[in-house]
Length: 292
Length: 194
Image 1 (spheres, rainbow over the protein chains, first blue to last red):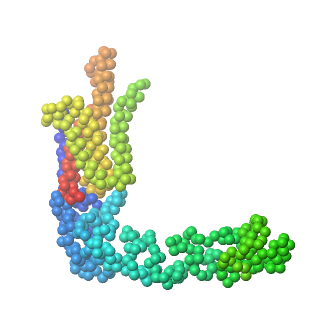
Image 2: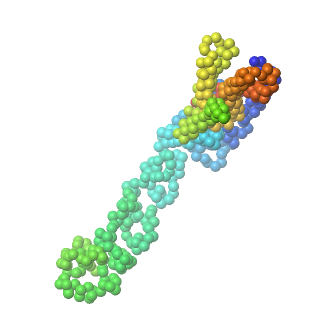
Image 3: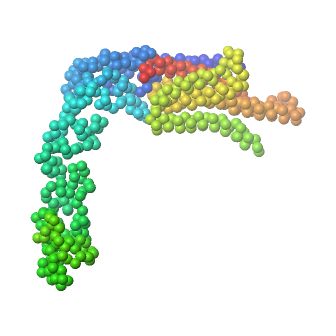
């Protein structure tokens, strides 16, 4: 069948117009995405960065961005006033491959971003191992006295999470938990003075070794403040005469009546106020535990 | 009335099915590449897609006697399969969402091309068959040629319209070829192949 020449002519003309548009507006017709803001003026000059048939190359970038000046001076030679960290590392990369991190065309929204994140692996080893060449150490109480490399606690991917080891601290510092930690403000801890190490380990706050039930169950009749039983924050001692229920005379009378002579160490028999004691007195006082 | 049901089953559904399947399979593959973070595969799929479409043109060359070997019916089947598969790969390739207008124009030209090809495959064959059947029936009833033409005026008109649609398959292919070629040349010209 003979092709209608008018249709062919219309299509051919349209194609010619489109091909002409490619040359007139390459940033719309051919470019895979808009350029970064700093390169906006190069939008229609593809060959400013691209070599025909060979693509873009780091050599082309360096024609404007001298490696020695990246992060320190603008392409016009004006010093960059605010010291940026970029100045610290671009000169210290293991290889000068701009395209490894920078795709000047901003990635379309639906795909991954075209700029890859910075990786410490790109740095020369001596620079990579000396964090202070780029980073200033924090001035807080935790970091102030430390003389070790950041990498002892921190990974290079992100500052947090960190893995702190108390062994890095001097003994004097180690004995003063409160120099770094705030004591918990709950009812139990508010009343405690002394070293956290009595119950807690340096590896982690929990599990704590202290379990009151092991010594005496605090049922609802015994929800008293700590110093009702532990006078002067001395948790190595206790007394049951701190409350009006248990006077010395009343306790003595109750026990003598049962024929119990040794009733000074109450928890020897009374571990759990909800349970009748099995022992009939006479138990020896346990080491380190005395009655007031 | 069995005719509409047959028509639906034999012509309309395969026609729409091929098109819908092309869209759904390409969306599924595109989604999978996004999900698995394998977009780089999509970037390279344009090449095998183009090669498959090029392979499918063996039938077109044979039809225009530019090549002599090959059985036309077999080549037509290959033309349909390869063009469909090639278009699928090119659609997935386009699905990695680059912003160049040229690439998108090429994709739209390709889709119109596939549509025109499928129209030829399903609708024209059907129209021709129905028209012939109608003529045959009327001849058997002893109608003269003039009456035949009178009765079948609208059917003939429809047939001609569909035939014209098939005729545009070639100019659309030409447009697609030029746009795809321009896109490919642009890639070769600017891409660093990394």
